[in-house]
Amino acid sequence: MIFSSSVFLFWFLPWVLLLVWGVPQRLRNLLLTVCSYLFYGWANPAFVLLMLASTVVDFCCGLMLVSGQKVQEDGQYPALSRQVHRSRRQRLLLFCSVSVNLGVLGFFKYWNFGIEVWQQLLLQVSGTAVDVTGVLRVALPLGISFYTFQSMSYCIDIYRGQARATRSFVDFACFVSLFPQLVAGPILKYRDLSEQLRTRRVSLVSIGTGAAFFTLGLARKVLLANPCGEASDLVFAAEAPGFSAAWIGTVFFAMQIYFDFSGYSDMARGLGLMLGFEFPANFRSPYRAESLTDFWRRWHITLSGWLRDYVYIPLGGNRRGALRTSVNLGTVMLLGGLWHGAAWNFLLWGAVHGAALIAERVLNISVLTRGPCSLLPAWLICWIRRTLVFLFLCFTWVLFRCGSTAEIGVMLGAMTGFRDAGPAAEILWTVLLQPWFVGVFSVAAAVLWLAPESEEFLQRITLVRAAWVLLLLPLTVCMMSAQTRNPFIYFLF
Image (cartoon, rainbow, N blue to C red; front, side, top):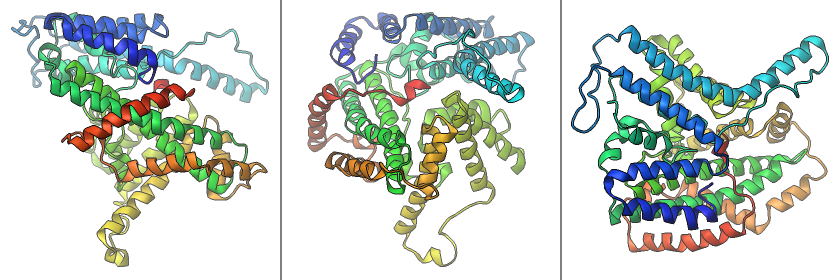
């Protein structure tokens, strides 16, 4: 079930809201957990068992980590002291939680990739193709990368003394399975949501603000991401696009993935507010970044924060010299690339970003701030920096979008002018110049670089802003009913 569907909008969501608002506070988490499992199991009920197993393992490990502690009045255990050395038993419990979660994630997400790599290696060694049709192939459960990170962080935080363990399995199951952010984030931490799980309140203000967030996110998805995706698919499917078409198609994809993912995040935040939860922001105008480091502070913020807290800092962060910092940074970006998908192109995407971040840090790059360039107006320097960062991101989005080295070669060759356009390139360019695509491109560009983010837009709701939201809702619903292509890109991760 996806947010931008009639089943969700007109059946699932209204009933869930009515039921959750109507039951007593003590029953809301149980009801919300049941609804979230129904939401997740809509396409494949078997995946529910996998999420339940992960939840049970981490809940039990969390309880055993604090065994011997006295339960407090709010139903949670006191946090472990950060200074006290952990026992061998506690270290084993943490290892159990991490290894089970990573083992499940590794099997379901990377097994097929491992089989393909094994087949390629055998082909290189033996010179003949190896039949692997009899080898087990596994289906990737939706959102497994998100909820395993979320569930696993619970035990890690308890072990570190940064979170308190809960005695309520329902509360923890509700945290892991919350349907607004279950399959595409933002990635939550129990320590940030524990109080809300117990004492949240729903008000007319939170419902109204949540509905506005949801509407803006739905509009981003339906009115911008989907049309941008149609144009992008035309270019990436071409055998030999021309220089201009390749760039336009890549920019369309950059727009698509941003509006697709930020739209989902806005809808998740809106649904959370309507249910009484406040989720963290996941995007802050990332294409306005003036450096790659700045970009990763603005893009998929909760994943960047998770990797920083649970990978980068434990590896040593930036506390052990420049060389070790560079190694840590490169490792994190490689893992971030693999998190996005089990394929060489994602690994390459992460490696390129890691190398660029390392270069930016080591060389202390400050473009246009020295020499004659420093005489330029500050606003012009700002926009030139943003343009340079965006051009780099477009090149790397090609690695992200293409599934094979051949496709990557075609697009990068066209974008750099080293590959001749095919006979159909003129037809492709003509299609992209249709008024519909030109209009979508113009509106998307204005939203990207001129309009405020949803969070900023909704900080103060005026009559004009409320009118915009009310106008967007029926327009979006009408457009949604006319569209045949409606996937969420990050559902694949």
